Amino acid sequence: MNESGSNIEQLVKKAQLGDKSCLEQLITLAEHRLRADIYRLTFEDELTSEIVQESIAEMFKIFGQLRDPQRFWPWLYKIAFNKFHLHQRKQILRKTVPISDVDPVSESKDALTALIGEELKQTIFDAMQQLKPEHRAVLTMRCYREMDYNMIAESLGCSRFAAKMLFYRAKKAITKQLARKGLGRGSLLIALVLFGKMTAESKAAAAGLSVSSASVKVGLPVSAAAALLSTSGIITVSTIGLVTIGTIVTTYQPSEQVPSPQQQFVQVLPSDAQQTEVASQKQCWYYYPQGPAGPVMIRQIKKDASGKASYYTLRQNEEGNYQFDEKNNTIYIRNCRWWNPDFSVSCLPTDPPELRSFLSKIAGTEYKTKYVPFNQKDLLVIATDGAETPEKPALITYQRHLLEEEYFQYNLPVGARVVDNRDQMHKRGWTFFTITGDINGKQISGRGRLPFVYATHRDFYPRLQVSIGSDIKVIDNGRQAGVFNLNNTLLTCTAGQFFKGLPRPWMGLHTIDIIRRDAAEKHLPFETKRLPDGSLAEVTILSGGLRLTYIIDMQNDLVTRIDLFSDDARIGQLDFSYLQDIDSASDFDAAALPAAAGQAGDEPGILWLFQLVQLEQLK
Image (cartoon, rainbow, N blue to C red; front, side):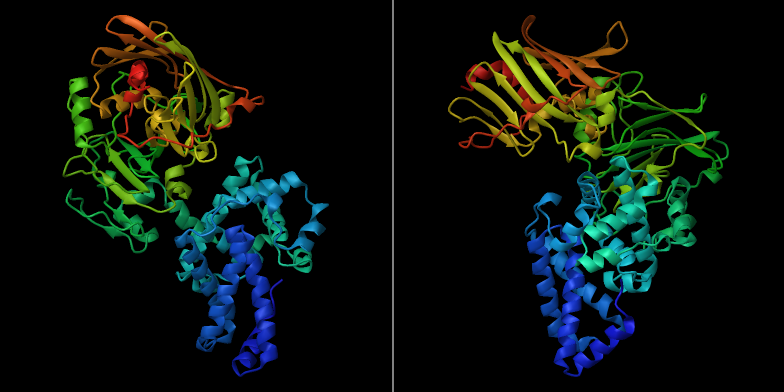
């Protein structure tokens, strides 16, 4: 489907010499091609038209600067991509458009309607929409325009190797999205073809579009380099040098400035090959895609003293919770996150000193793990044996697109049996829940939505609505949060505030740790004990003369009940129920905040649950 290179070269040469007819032909070709390819980045007709027109105008302005007519397409793509990124930075026209509203080329879409089922079209469109724009760009150039990696590199302003790695990651990303939607690995080619046809610039272009298997291969060197981005590939200086060109290797100092997001900052752990007196080494990896205040993903790995044999014992990533039983060579997929067997609070290397100090007082032991003070997205901390010292510090990296890297996902142990013990709602990755109960004699009813894993928290973000009696409402709809009475004059907060003190499994820690850490943030003392049947735990949190007692289902990682007490008198109870089946969930639509919201106040954190007892003072 590519225009002949010699034809383009002749058109460019003649147009630069003043041939208006050739210039018009060139503009027509450029508009048709850019319209299809930029649309694959924006999914918006108006924005696509704007970027195409701006790119053509820019082409006119600097047309005489093109020295090599053979490089016309990568030169033009570079202009268009710069315009696209400019619009991204300005955040213009960013809304998502469903495929039913999309008609980039009506005649092409009409011709395909009979060929492609609407459901399959929507599935593929949605999968592509989840990709980063740079991934869609490299797929477009390689698969639909058959550009070689030199031309792609020129278009993107990067090295040839970087272009190949970007294409490799784009393939991994779209394969992953297709798998989430029930399409197997063999669907990659057909998905690329169908998406290309749906977004083609004309009926003729759609009819002639094909994607060869050769065009989706990146070659052995890049695949090998990607494979090196594994546990062993990041531990030693020599290996890092092979695969992270431009990486800075340095010594960690607490006073160091946080590097820019575009820069990788790596500190290298000593090689285990020099620690032969130790039978085995353990590492714990903490990855924060949104920074330390957001979700954390944890992977524990074990390796022998040589550093050659390694496997994970625990993996809690964006999709689920996996635990490897070495004795039985079995991987168990569980509902629950891991928790400390002695019921101590799980701590993170990014926990600030004041939180560490409070948790140490509660536990009666000192928290010795070295503090990592950086607050940045895409932060990875790798700790060895859980006890870093100045001689053996934590490894800290800033890595873009880490979720797509092999060295965090890490393959399952070869030959291991997989046992999926998740219930229906945990397999789905989210659910609805209801709340019933009473406080101070007033009936409570509520409902909400709860994501279980990071992969679902954007599409199925947490929501909560609680009614106390007939005149008080607590609403957290994912965009805003607040407490309102009949006059709509009470407190407003940031979204997510009213999930403090409630399960937040997508954050990456077990509910028992989420609840206790929420209490510690407000310096509220707490007590923990296991209940007789072994499957439940009880956490009691104190605030003045009030206390909350949580009953936590440890295996399902959820709160089942909260009891409220004033001194020794029970004054309320909240019961939680979680839906396995969500087919009939029409009553769970998100609640809108009243128009006349009150002024924002201090974020109450877990204290909002104690304030429920004192609502008479808020009316």
